Image 1 (cartoon, rainbow, N blue to C red):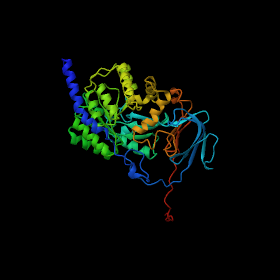
Image 2: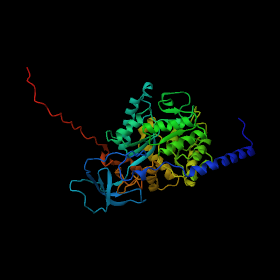
Image 3: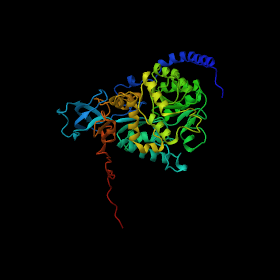
Image 4: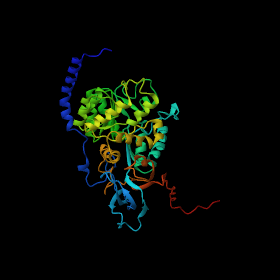
Length: 471
């Protein structure tokens, strides 16, 4: 294919920039509807939909983590303190020698260990098939739920208290999200997108068609009205975020962003080259991956406050195992470790906020927590300090979830999602592999590095009637 002459290419780029400027100006003021002001004073679900719910009738119990060093993700340095949990929330962070908790509180000595917010992974696929999944079970909801429950238990015991699931099979991600929120399974919080929305033949729908490249995982939609309807359908199913992918038209991405923001949800986009520019101009909230994009697109991201989830390690895995992407019409570009890392450095230099995610598809889930630690090391290599990388993994990720008022830091009033690390992860990232305890929603789920599953308490029989005479 012949290339445009330099003058013609420059004229095209200038024309595209001029066309995008008014769209960018409008996008700067766009964003998800914040319903917190009209919900003040009542309890809601702990997700971006913020649905009103009845208060918990159970009297709150206290859990005290005493004697540790606290890395709260507010400061960049750890300090000695005692963390008091009451019910589902953090009640207080006290000096190490303080007291004052209830006499019946459960007091846990964590001397010599680090207490910090639970880790958040902003890009997972808990229900995708892995090499052990039979072909005829790859697009079934039941097998997806079972795969997801197994993967989520691995994440929980590895110190993750929240994950953002960006595509899975049928309704399985939403079922897992509901069961986790109710405390019925050992799992992090699951903020699910459900189906990926793309144009016909877009990302993850290309040939050769496989069970996970079909309608059980992706919705192929065409036209602005169809994209708007897909967003509404995802919201109805329980979406905490809307995921879109190239390819699309400017009208389609604009309609999806407008509808999602009106519903109070953020939009994240898996897109590359010109589509990234279109998405940033339309006001999407986050761009996934280190895929190629122009300097102009990076400027639009910075100007419109579009964040990034770079997922460098999963692409390094692809390079290490396959050498790159081949045979995919949604990955028509060259990719190297250096080009991916250069994209990361450009985003950082432009001031684009970056969260931490792994894109944990298939067998990558078996590598937890190694690939997440590797992702954090990319951040450090790219100019973050170790404490700054941990803040990206917790506080920044919570903000990008639109849940910074509930998650991401250890502060009174925040939900009690806490991990205890047998080491100093704020100094040495490898210590994150040494998870001792995990508290989610105020409940101790992992102790001594092992899941804690309380025994079943049999329900009482109904009050028996006087027995009839047996003949």
